[in-house]
Length: 90
Image (tube, rainbow, N blue to C red; front, top):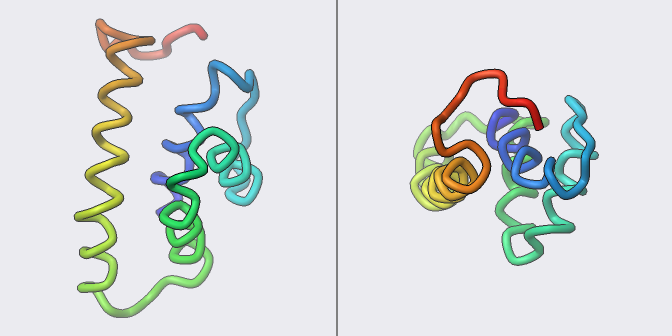
């Protein structure tokens, strides 16, 4: 879940010009840019802080929000890193 939150932060990095490893500030920046996905990212934050023991709950979350995150990541890469370069200078 930490990776999902940090991925969401990465979507904002060009506009915000800032990065943090801390989950709560990363969540705050994400929700500023993606208010329609605030509840889902808040759930990811909750899972990161208080992991659940039911794998089906996590899988259900990943099958919905996880798919959206992957699609957004592909779109971000197509826009900002079409050649998929490692260590991209922003």
